[in-house]
Length: 496
Ligand code: FAD
Image (cartoon, rainbow, N blue to C red):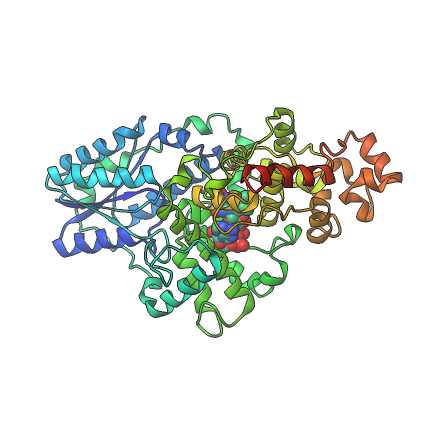
């Protein structure tokens, strides 16, 4: 007999609700714990998981296996091509190993919830308890309601309720106990499970050794690296977070989204660690940077709560139904110019090039580039949403969809549609000295001063350098784009 924990987007041993419960039950029953990781290339393909993210997860699984091995806990790894076969394979394994209890942490997208529901039934038929746990959100979805008993659709009141809930139920932030060692001899009994190999993935096929080295260096995988990052952020950077978080060249944010997305770090761990170094030990008072950072981590919960309550957003529908009828442009050349960083708007181009090279983008730049695609180029925001998810190392459906909905004004609690970011002003404000642009748009490296933000309008030497180096002129004129956007959005939502 044994108890099973099924790893998905929770690739860590510490502070893991389902793993902790599985280990406690195994201990109470005096049996061993087996961990399982099943990957389906078809599933990853369907979710457009980026090569960088695939590689990050494989690296994290490798480290997870090594840590589990020290506890005498086998990590069984298998590749199941078709995602619909994963459930059956899990049931078969549970039967083969004669286990009566299988744990996992819930994922909240509709397909994943359906899969879990199916597993409950399939396992019950075989007299196995399948026990999915809330873990991915700090506050489980469904816990917070407005005064009239509804789900919040606006962040600020939701955030106040989130903080109040956590202050009233502090155990939600408690660290889940680590699993202890497996009984002696268990390792030998299930010895063959240790032979599991990490499978190759089609998504990683085209990664060169240089890419892989780069990822290792830029994005160290696994939970120990995640904790290091939070600790470094909370000791070195959090004090200036509020003042600096919007400036891409300052490298002043936590850079933990990759870990939250793969589950090498629980959002709960981040919030608890931040609270514990806060002068007030509260979430919403005390050091500015700390409460500010906690409120950013809260956005992640907010978008998950929204997804659970309005699952149609997973089906290519905008949160705001009335925005379904906006007439988008279909301009492949514009889309490619945006994706490749050739729009003639230096801040947009720098951001898109940084995404391609680092597989990450700063939050302010995500907002600028998303707004530019949806409002300046008037291209369907879903094209951008897909492009981001298939390139980001921290790609995460709920946060990405939420960010795109916010920036294109079609989502929950969005930027109002008539607020069209002026990329020139955003550039001057958030990359004042042009440091970020100069790093990524080499054609403009020699442009001095503020002319870097819009070299063709600045004229003179700046224009000459841009022209000589083949930097494109703006592919769309700002004033025209703004007016077209306002008219098209207005017509689309039927306010004419
Ligand atoms: P920090 O500033 O250190 O914030 C700490 C943590 O809080 C982040 O790691 C993240 O988990 C969470 N967080 C911060 N801001 C947000 C936010 N606006 N929404 C949700 N969670 C947030 N985030 C992703 O994790 N995956 C995505 O695919 C993703 N796509 C986005 C697309 C768009 C168009 C926009 C505008 C935002 C998107 N974000 C996404 C949110 C945000 O940009 C990143 O979480 C953040 O840049 C990560 O960097 P960091 O860890 O240094 O953040």
